[in-house]
Amino acid sequence: QELGELETIDDLELREIVDTLSKDMKDSDVAVNVASTEPLIPYNPEYHKTLEGFEEMLDENKKEWASASMLYAYSALKQGIPYANFTPSVGSNLPALKELAIEKGVPHAGNDGKTGETLVKTTLAPMFSYRNLRIMGWMGYNILGDFDGKVLSHKDNKQSKVESKDKVLEKVLGYSPYTITEIEYFPSLVDNKTAFDFIHFKGFLGTNMKMYFIWDAVDAIVAAPLVLDIARFLLLAKRKGCKGVVKELGFFFKSPMDTDVVNTHEQFEILKEWCSEIAK
Image 1 (cartoon, rainbow, N blue to C red):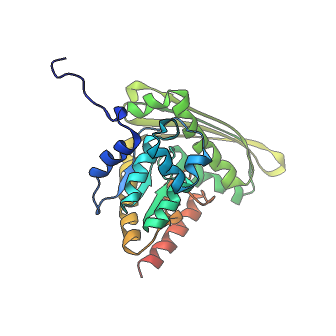
Image 2: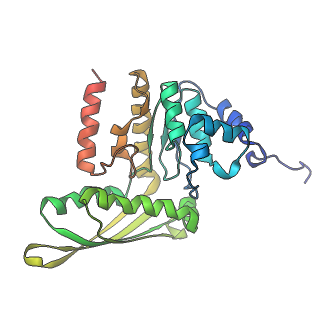
């Protein structure tokens, strides 16, 4: 009370927020979004389709159509700073911001870091296709602690995460098995994340079989090296004159932009080939 009321970023207009964010960014930086998952904002072509429309949204302070991840992405790309979205939030995955990245000649990548259960899922699922084993159903039950878990306990925040996890099977298999994906907050786990998966599949002579696995990891420890690698690759891409979405970095993401390839084996080969080419 003695200090009086503190001004927060929420009190600012959109243009003021962008100016504030931009002050903390330098030309040699890479901006990586590792914040908690945001509630989904519906796509609005008036403000999200073109750069002109997006900047009109900023000028008119249309906060209902903006999110923090969009504003960080805009602030970085506007200054020619590479940007990566390690979350399921929108980030730079808008036509307007992709237009900005091309205009400024800056690379960007996303979305949603593939660090745990989905990494195993997109590595394991191709095996069933290779052996002509048809997956009838896949259940994944995830529990995690820390602030991320608390945020994901809210339905609106959880929605984009569940969608990101669910979509990968159809893309890998070419069909949509029955799926159950649950994410629940478990406070005592703190930074640990545990996933229990059950796979029901059909084999030779129509025989039904089952597979189970448990993934148990420290969330920050599996995420940190990926963030470092993504930052290094984006800096390399910038030095080599790459601009726009670097879809070859899809290896690191659950929902890679501008590509439907989510099979981990294929993604790794694409990444290696790109590295060989760009390093010449």
